[in-house]
Image (cartoon, rainbow, N blue to C red):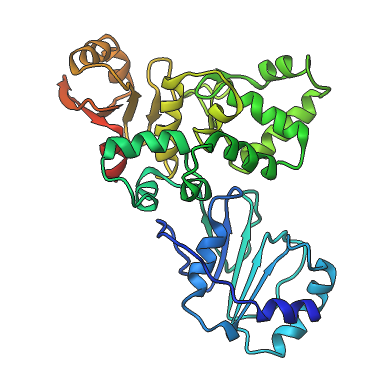
Amino acid sequence: MQSLEYLYEIKNKNTIYFDRKVSISSKNTIINGVKKSGKTHLVRDFLTHFEQINILYIDLNDERIEKKRVVQNLEKFIQSKPIEILVIENFDFSFALPKVSHIILTCNSNYQPIKGFETITLFPLDFEEFISFDKKHFNIEHLFNLYTTFGTFPSLILENNSESIFKIQEMLRSMFDDKVEFLIFKKFTESQGNKISLFQVYNQLKTSIKISKDNLYNKVKKLEDEKMLFFVEKFLSPKANKKVFLIDFAIKSALTFKKDFLRNFENIVFLELLKRDEKIYYTDLIDLYNDEKNYAIFCIPFLTEDFIEIKLNKILSHLKELHIKKVDIVTIGNEGGFLLENIECTILPFWDWALQY
């Protein structure tokens, strides 16, 4: 009870906060997302609308508390205070929740739905959110350059540290408790934007670490469930090699000296599509493809409009076969558009493309 009393007396306030595109609107809410995606700041911003006397805020990762005793005394303590809002950070779904007017739970991306709770998935920042976090720069191209350098994790962007690579490394070390899991994740960063199979990764890893196929597959599934890795299927070919993308495109530069700007740029574009909640595929000739909208996206950072039109003309039969109605060509700086028979093709700089939704 003493721990709960102490937690009850603590004032939990944001020292700094910028609006996100998602917010807490339901009485009972689960916020899931990767570590460092901003869940705590979202919760604390919500709490500013209430009196401190009505709030009990518990972080189960707090080393000062003993979870078992806190859980045992929780309901009794709540009944003894005018608590209307219970917040449990890093909730593990291992115990029943007490009756409170508002309950806010946070957890990592791998979560369990609870009846009567709205679920919010919080990703790191998209480009529009990144702009709102940066109050110093106004040139859109410069902001994009900063975005590609610092990545999408809010805490790193707020620090605006010139040693961003080492900050990302430090953050990743804190996110991974399992050394083997981290080595697996690191191996996948080398394949960012490329098509790869788990069997290929297994063959590469087994020369440097002791691991079984089953163990590898289980750990990769966990990384996927936790939304650290994303695998994009080839359209109508689920058994084909999958494209791999990272939760943050800047991670590769922090973990390897290997450079591939085109693949990194495609990861940047993919993350914008991910936050639009669209099911995305690829084909042998299309970078990213939404079959429900008959929509194709090409990531072509530097080609001029003339060369882009020539490139798409060469695959016109493929676009028609898939009944493509709209094509977006995402670039860095170039813009324009043309009709390819009846297919509308729009060329947009990334910043215009990302901010139009």
